Image (cartoon, rainbow, N blue to C red; front, side):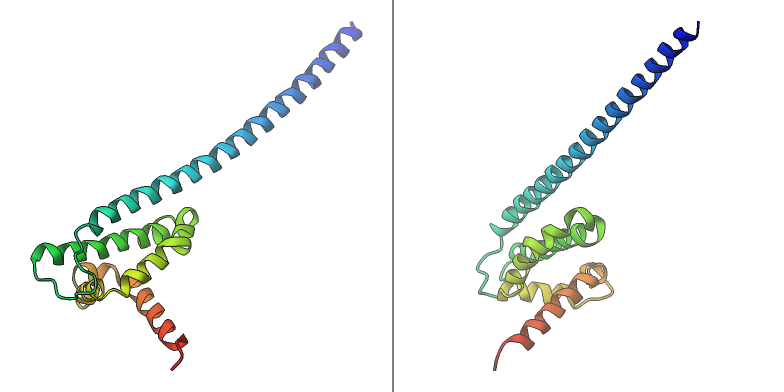
Length: 159
């Protein structure tokens, strides 16, 4: 009878070892899958935001002309800044762990480029001029960041 118990004990140990190995493999697969899905989500988010930007870009008009001589043109330029807000908010507030690299790696430089365009700058200044209403109210953290970048680059430039 004692021999039967030793086989049962061995079987229990072997089962425990295989169960532990299966759990470790499942954990490894789960972690790997999670990383891949996060990467895929980043790519999907980036492509969606870029696609939306390209839709807006077609409507912006001449970027060296700060006067919007049509309501549609002014609305498109304002839509650009609302879109920038979406990029900033997603990357810096909503999901910074997943998306801050998108802002730091691409969107910040793209926004700086847009900020330098007279037409987009005029629309930004108009939207930001009302700190208690609409864009000027909810986008204050981003507005401060853009203005801080501008101040920093003005200090860095010689002359």
